[in-house]
Amino acid sequence: MLEPLGLGTHAAEVYRAMLERPDLSVDDLVTSLGRQPELVRSALDECVRLSLIKPSWDTPGELRVVSPEIGLQTLLARQESEFLERQKRIAEARIEVARFIDEYASTQERLRNTVTERLIGIDDIRARIEEFTQECSSELLALATGGPQTEASRQASQPLCEELAKRGVVMRSIYLDSVYNDPATVEHLRWLHSHGDQVRTTASLPSRMLLFDRTHAVLPIDPDASAAGALVLRGKGVIATLCELFDRVWESALPFSGGRPQPRERGDEELSGQEQAVLRLLGEGLTDEVVARKLGVSVRTGRRITAELMGRLGARSRFQAGLRAAQLGWLTGPEPVRAAGAGAGPQ
Image 1 (tube, rainbow, N blue to C red):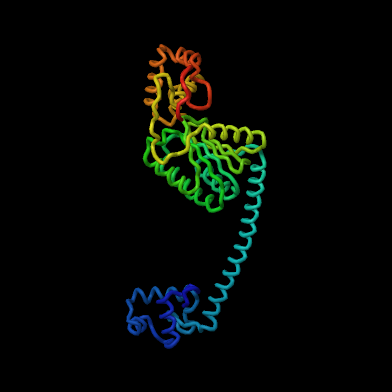
Image 2 (image 1 turned 135 degrees about the vertical axis):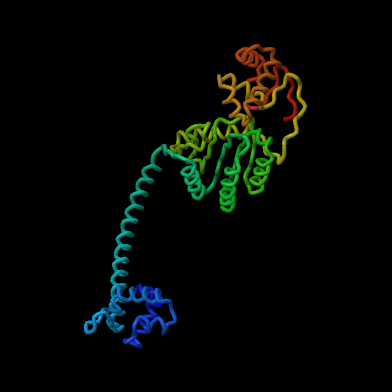
């Protein structure tokens, strides 16, 4: 019980023994306590260091014990003084911590009141998304690029979905059709759908995006490396534009079916949504790599789709393929289209 005063168990034992028998020598203490000589000498040294035992004034070479009223009270007073000093330092540190918090809050408030806020690194991005999720009160809109979702992304999104569902927030998410190629992502979308997320899929998406309550948007700085950084956008003009973009994509996207959609019968001149997306993206002059990323497929798959389309169009170049597709009316309309003159079949 005296350890808070700096007095160890063995030193306290030796001190108590000498209080009872002040005339005990070192050898007597070893015999009386039944301890090793080295342990007894170490305990005596500790008592001397704490001024509980001092050299004798009358008999040089011998030790005298200091009464507990003086020795222990001195140790107690020392500890109390140190404790008060620590309390004082903690109080000063608390003031400094409060100052740091106020400065940080002021900085964040300034940043959040600007039209654009820059987030660097996946930790900052996810932390900010968690904050927006906690504040979200009515609607969350999401464009999820990249096709199959990573395990880390799936695990990060599920707690946020549960939190929003408990508060009755409307959730609408659009994924790429290529997610059906990944069973883990399909199972994840089933989970989201069962927890209230209205999931749809489409052939291509412009960029990853989150829209909170139609007032804040989070987009990647670099679409090819979404973990590298993100922008938080505010302002009625830019948010209205992004909301209109989402609504248009939503209207043309297909509801998530819980499994891979069954391909419908189509004629030789009819395009799928993915094929139409490839033609449109190639018409914008995008590379094979960018086209594949926007479709959420491998570059090899994207090139295969392109080659098949060029064969159907009898085109020798991509430019020629785009020109012939435009002449046939294959690049018009938000939905997957037919060639000119084809009848309107089931969607």
